[in-house]
Length: 90
Image (cartoon, rainbow, N blue to C red; front, side, top):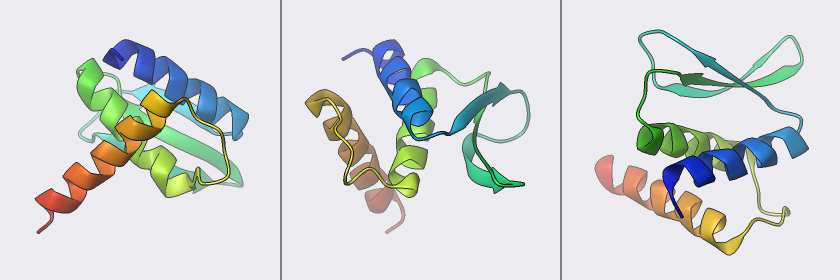
């Protein structure tokens, strides 16, 4: 699945979970936070699609998707990104 499609799928999952995604400019990649009882996922708009998809996947994992149906390709992508992050922190 192409990164643009993954981004779209992950945005739909976020919407189902009541998470607002904001694309902003800045000196950050992105992440999940709660601001005044509102769930927000912030993503740097200048990132390449591959990195945007990775940031969204990591944030979706942080939110928790165990009980939610995801397309197999989307779930596999999230799991792959989590595994890459785990390897890079060793």
